[in-house]
Structure formats: structure tokens, C-alpha cells
Image (cartoon, rainbow, N blue to C red; front, side, top):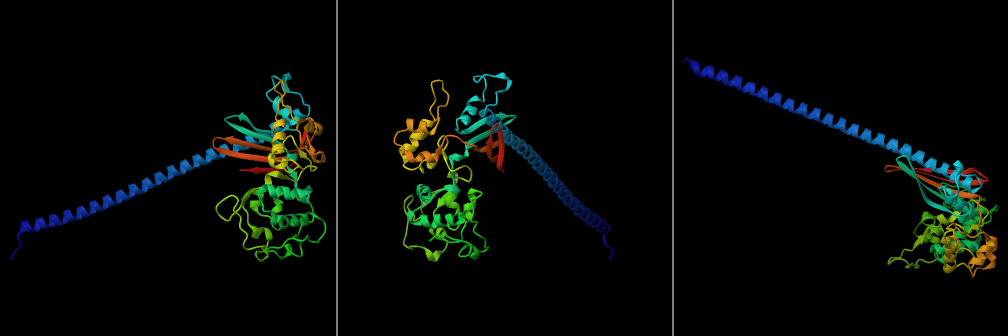
Length: 371
């Protein structure tokens, strides 16, 4: 039986239409995928460009912040020269010179804290502190160490376990104090082993190498008797609990790093020493420490700084001080801690250094740059 021609033709057209539809759908899918891939590429390129822009801005700000901090060191050098007699530039009088007051404070042995100097589109924050406002860790006696540890909140039961190893680290012999440590009986047994220095500390953080010392003792935190004793089995009493500052058994101690230095002759500069350092002087309690701080910040009738002019001036102006502190104090300094923080936009760069003032010249003994 012959097929109907109309039906055959219609079937052919239908198959062609279906095939064309499939091809059109495939082309549409390919086009959509292509558009999506191009969109991702464009977005990633834009994101990368944005990151590069941010990085370029950061590098610029970082570079500028570094320059500002180094400019702060130059300002410190100028102020130190002025404090030692260098004249003001441009023939300015003291009243016209904006640096006069800062230079005068340095001349009188005082600190400069938080001096802000705008530079370009940023600024530098400058601190200049007489380093003898801190205690020379290489010259501290056992009694002075006990005062320092006590003021930090460390229990008295652990004083010897901290002080004996410090004295062993500094002394030249290899004989251990009762609770101390030397190379043969302690440091050589560590992993990795090392030797006791048997000499003075070069930096304050070198204390972390000494048996019994820990980061919380230096910078503050939770006191750990096991760390101090160096051996858990040597703990004096497993039932000792401390409850001075919280509802837990932990005792929180203040850090002592800010009180210490490795520079100077061991005398305390009373013009700049902070409260905690003043409290280490024999017979100086809370009231006397605050009286010293208040008196050294006095100004005269002209509004100029009027700190202590000599050790004798201290005794004339502050009643109740023991004469024995005369050999432990000074009003002058040759060592200075300079901290310059440069800031550009939201980026900071800090330089701090220890400098020795030799007349109008500064000699840098230590230099640290921090991001």
C-alpha cells in the first residue's frame, strides 16, 4: 500500500525541525557557558587589579611610614644636640622656637613622651626616655630582685627559685646557688642543650634563657610555679593555690620587662623613673614614689619645667627619704631609649633604639625596626 505523500513530507519537516531545535539549544548552551567564562575572567581580572591597587597603596604607605619613623630619629638627634647647647636654627629666640621646651626637658634629664610631628600626609610619634629610668639587670642585688618580684605580684616562696639562677647566669664560676643552675647540672641536660653565660646580660630578653624565667614574668600573665621550678617533681607543695586577683586558682602577675635595662651605671634617674622603679629604692613607699613624680613635674613661675636640679634638691623638696638612696640615684643621663613611630594612612612603622649621647653626638648601640 503506497504511503500518503503528505504524511511523508510532514514527517521529514518534523525531523528537520527537531534536529534544528537541538542544534539551536546546543548553541545557546555553548553561548551561555562562553559568557559565564568570560564573566569570570573579567571579574578575576578586576579583582586582581583591585588587589594590585591595594598592594601598591600599602607599599606606598609602608614606604612613607618608614621614612616618617626615620625622620623621627633625625628629630631626636636634633633635640639631643639642642639639649647639649646647639643653637636654634634661623636665629630664633627660645619663645619663637617650637622645639625649645622639648630640648629643655632633655637637658634637665626628663622624658619626652608622645611628641607628635606632622610630616607630609602622615606624622611621627616620638618618645625619648633616659634609659637609667630603668634598672640595670646586671647590677641588681638580691634584695632589689626581691623588691621587683614582690611588686610584680610573684609569691615570696618562689623568689629564690628565680633569683638564684639569675645570679648563677651572671657570675663567673660554675658553682650553683642552692636553687640555681649551671651548665653541667641543668642547661646541658636541656633539649637542645646550651651553656650558662657566666657573664652579664646583653639584652633584657636574654633572661628567658635562664632557668625559671618565662614570658609571663617578663611581660605579665598567669604565674606558673612549675615553670619557675623547672621540674614538676620539685614543686614545693601540690596544694598551693593562689586566689589574689580572680576567682580561679591562677595568680596574674605584672611584667617586669619595662623596668629593666642592660645600659647605664646602675643609678636610677629620678627625673624619668616610673612608679614601679621608684618603689625599688630603699624606704620609698607608694606615698613617697608619688611625691617624687609630682615634684619633678612642677613648673616655675615662667611655666618652664622645674625638675630636681641635683640629688640634694630631691631631699630638699621631698620629705621622708632615706639618705641611703643618695648612692643609688642621679638626675642625669647619657643613655637614651628613642622610639619613633611613623604613620601613613593606616600603616605604621616603628624604630626603637638605644643611643649614647656624647656631647652633641648620638652613638646608636642598639637598633630595632618593627612593622
